[in-house]
Image (cartoon, rainbow, N blue to C red; front, side, top):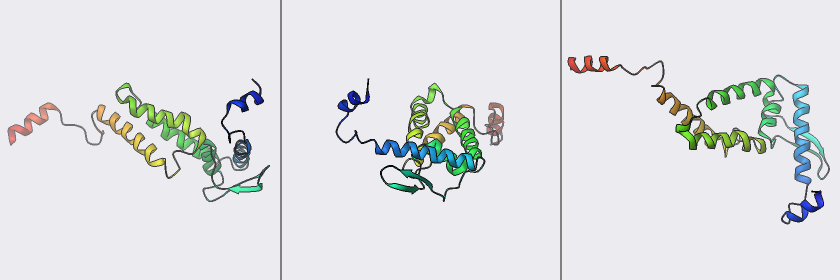
Length: 163
């Protein structure tokens, strides 16, 4: 299928590819930052700059791809740290918590590619709540935190006898 055939199927206004071109240039700018500062990135206060075919010289702090956002702002160490957090939380995925698991996986596998869902103020509370619920459910299933183990049945009976 060629692009002309595809354009005829799209609704009006979607034929404008300038947003897609700028997003691709944004990814290249993020990659450039990662190449120049691979460990720590550029930091949260810095902007990405690129030459937009529509707007000319353009700069913004926001990166539309969540993974590129982490790479540009926090570098390789940030990607490793975020990956570790995701690994820890995603280990809690189970059939018993299917709705929460599916929601969190959809954010990680789909939404994170279109925006920094875990870092944007409108979506990060949802991401944090889903991750927290999933993690808390796993802890509850395993019998609580190791620091505060549940009392055994014999300890409970002994406590009832003293009362």
